[in-house]
Length: 196
Image (tube, rainbow, N blue to C red; front, side, top):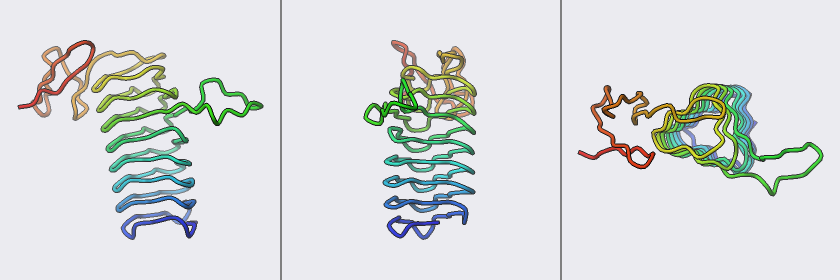
């Protein structure tokens, strides 16, 4: 069901079982599959795919060409930049100390997932943290702090176990991507892509 106040680009695909609450905006080539629910004031970028049983919003921005796999809920306070991958059943929290009997909507922690980041299946992202560009969060990891660009994070709590390239390949000690030949440099616990 699509509410009249929702803006849907004619090139978007909305499965008949999906719900889109208005006002929301679904851009060109977006795909909303079975049982997706987009809540009010949410933007879904062009080319983004929302898998079965995904819930987004309210007041959430999802960038272009993102892939949100089945059973993911993206709550208010979470922002996904372009090209983000969210694996099946990964979790975003929005309050650090929830209680059923205490209203804490004014305490939502902001979570930013930067361009090209990958979040593995069943990983948990605790609110109030930033996931750096092109980082990779392993399946089942629990992120409790900011993640640097290109970091490969695993464990509970998640810690950096290496670096990955822009294409997602694990980098060796030479910091050269075997797939693309791109060269990286490590400085002060950060990784930088060296320009040609």
